[in-house]
Amino acid sequence: MMKRTYKSELRRVFLIETLPEPLTRASSHLQIFDNYIENTRLRLRSVRVPETKKWSWILDHRFPPDENDLSVWKVAEMFLNENEYHVFEQFEGRELRKNRYFYEFKSKQLELDVFIGKLWGLHLANVVFENIEEMQNFEIPPFVIREVTNNRFYLDENLVGKGFANVQKEFQNQEE
Image 1 (tube, helix red, strand yellow):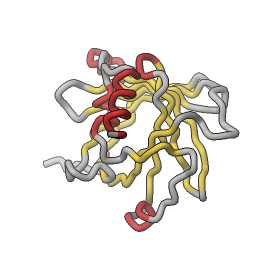
Image 2 (cartoon, rainbow, N blue to C red):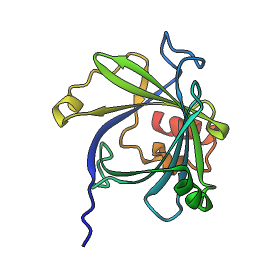
Image 3 (cartoon, one colour):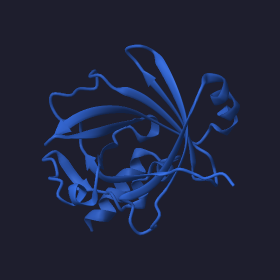
Image 4 (cartoon, one colour):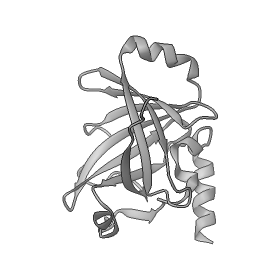
């Protein structure tokens, strides 16, 4: 029997209005194309580095062990070569596109996702932690609008097919 190896990922997710200074949309970033394979927990990710035009491809399986706590995820990644990636292209179609920027705050690296396409206007900050204590003691950056870690709406696989108007409606529903 094959043993699966998953790493645990501890994370918090925040809604932000825009990139914090000194970052701009022209700052160094990655271009990410995520395709969620329907009726599975699998994601086919293509990552492009604009400066070098270098691509990488990843097939990953991710899920929260506790459906009520979206701060802990089990993740298994398989890095593909270009030929292997092309075998999986048949599953494309449920895609999200975003540019990922990196920002350091209080010695933690934040991944800032600026969504493009129909979700233009949505910006999320992800922070990954080494342990629960670090995650619980994290000081929320001043540019954060609100934490959305446990709001299923903001999971990438749930954002597929939605537009920014859906995000605005969800935000307003949270206000009430």
